[in-house]
Amino acid sequence: MTVSPVSRRDRKKAATRQAIADAALRLFLERGYDQVGIRDIADAADVSTATVFKHFSGKEALVFDQDEDRESELIAVVRQRPAGQSILEALRQHVLDTWPLIDGHPQAAEFTNLIDSTPVLRAYADRMWTRYTDSLSTAIADEIGVDHNDLACVALARFVLDIPAVARGRQDRRAAVETVFDILTHGWEPSSKPQTS
Image 1 (tube, rainbow, N blue to C red):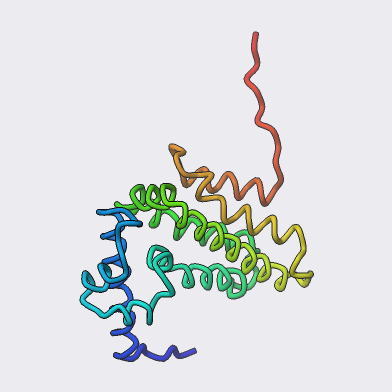
Image 2: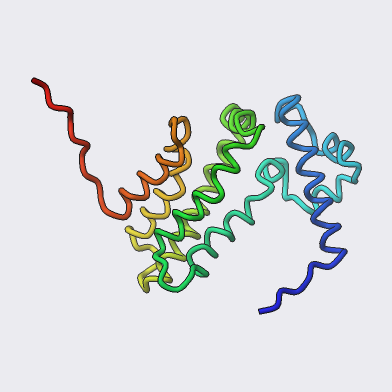
């Protein structure tokens, strides 16, 4: 399959969009979300406010600028996985390939703090994760031929999406991700307690 090259116009649009998102995040981290307006972001990115709104629906979307790409990636992981690879293995590989890069970003802690300390961003993030859960569970349901509201598919999607948060703060985060996926794959068994003499 031949992939069409991205046109110069599309590259320029993508570069402008990224410049706007980068300027917005820098300002939000420096001044705080509520202290930054769309005009400030437009000036910092050297574009008009109309250009900002051409690329983003509002201030919250500027913080989560890769939202739609991440949602599309999740669906593609399930629908375009290699023949013979299980849904859980495809999702495991996706989390292991992408999450350490995100979590290891130099601004990851500041970004998380920005969201946690800003109620409107927390609410936006919750709505985004709900949408991701719906999209991922629908893709899983389609793959196995069950109704879109199948509880097992919804639960699996939610658990997978929460794995990075569960693993965050663990000494060996990769091992934590693997452990949670092992539980999802094989079921939970209690850890054996050390014997006391």
